[in-house]
Image 1 (cartoon, rainbow over the protein chains, first blue to last red):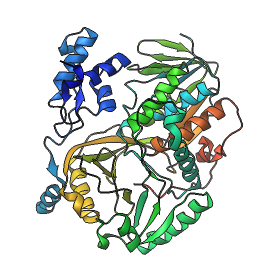
Image 2 (image 1 turned 60 degrees about the horizontal axis):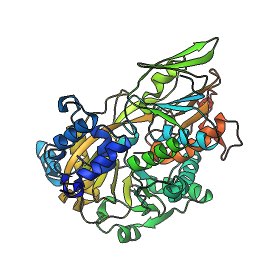
Image 3 (image 1 turned 180 degrees about the vertical axis):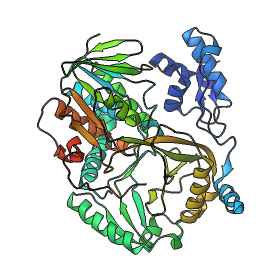
Image 4 (image 1 turned 90 degrees about the vertical axis):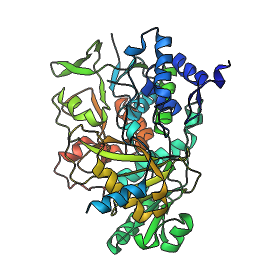
Length: 93
Length: 381
């Protein structure tokens, strides 16, 4: 299968070919790749692409996937409407 | 190894300084970062670029930097889009006092050829129709302000500097700066030693610690400032909407997401860059007040980053009288990203003793030690 058709990040439509290009250019951590390709910045927050990209990094560096750092996780766990947060905060008072 | 200059920090300031030094013929430049490029304040910033400031120093830095951004992709021969968008900053006045202050700011900005102007409420609503008309009384607008992708812009400088022969060392932390008879001898990291007599401190939130390594007491204090980002949606807002009195900035980036931030009052000075629910609550309340329609969007992520705050909220781009060979590009107070082109140009001119593009006395470290009255920038969130 063409590597351009293998999608690693569904939120931002990033392919295996895109990730391999960055690996060849010297971006060897998930965080660096994220900042160039937006992987992990979409609504799923890296839940799909996180391990897939770590596996590609491990393969490229010829290391075990356990030694490749996982991506930084941040709040929120799931998308929440700003207005719901405001209403919740108002309700607290 | 030997180096003619060691730059500490590979955020946009460090990358811009490296590029500009190399461009002016300096060889053997090493940039050291304890992590990867943009891992500090640059990669956590609000990605806005504006010229509407209340002090002359900030106005000039911003204006010249925006002029650079306009052609940066070509100048740096960068292969990707830096996502520069010039759809303005709309700054809301919410009180009569603020409106008066903005009128003075506009006079200053216009005197420096910054094309900002005051708008009535109706004119502002014509530019951003989903503004809550009851949340402000008037506004100022500068059409050439805008947005730029911090990761891409820094990468552009990084790639251009590499092409000029600059050596970058990532995931290496500077642990000491060796001196002998008052002169800088070497920069020590956890895995190497760089013999050099010239060091640039572009360490962002850690600039104070780096300065301490050569016994310089630097008045730069890191403060956590938080941001959130929404899901991407179809384009609905051109300019950055900002209010100092309501403590908010909010912009839709070309990718479609809305980025918004505010200052949590009373932040202690430390290296915390965590996320808080308090920020989320206050941010939600503020944005629902000013831009109610944005309340319908989902927050997908929040984060924090350091403002490296100087006493007057203006940068320090300077040599250091008490330590030969030590140079500073720090204290940007949350605005280092948008000033980076001028930071690189001005500091490289100072270091190489070239005629300065701008009067750099505004940014000299000595302004804090000469008992001068400090003119503090008030146009900040």
